[in-house]
Every structure is written in C-alpha cells, then in structure tokens.
Image (cartoon, rainbow, N blue to C red):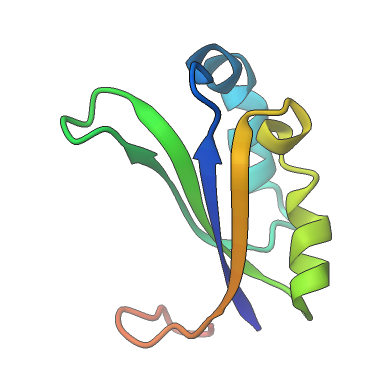
Length: 97
C-alpha cells in the first residue's frame, strides 16, 4: 500500500535541512528503500526548501509512520508537522508498482 507523507519544516529550519541533507538523500536511495517518489516543497520562487513530500510503500499507516521516523530529517527535528495519508497512484505510475 502507498502512503503520501507530507512534511512541513519548522520555521528557520534551513540550517537543520542543509546539515542533514546528505544523510537524508542516502536514506532515500538506500538499497532497501521503500520510498517510491520524493522531493522538497519550496517557496514560490523555488529559492528555498520548506518541507518534503514522500510516497512510501508500507503495510499500514503505522508501518509508514515507523519507517519515516528513521528519516535523518525527522531524527534531527526538522519537521513542525508530518501528515501521512493512504494514497492511490493513478497517473504516471511506473511499471511494477
């Protein structure tokens, strides 16, 4: 099952984001990653990152929550809020998902 994970950075969180970005990217790309799509939210001009959107494959919302707790951004306390919702991929779905 797929889950959309919508993360909003804390105000002034850019320093935390940048300091933890290499570890976050490694977590996203790990061989056992359950992340199917990921990318940052940005300001309107695209100049700064303000949060993250992840699509995670998990057995349940609790499983998705536990998996995402291991994100280096989450461990560093970057997020002011995290919302996880079941999500159905309809358009643009890659083969095999």
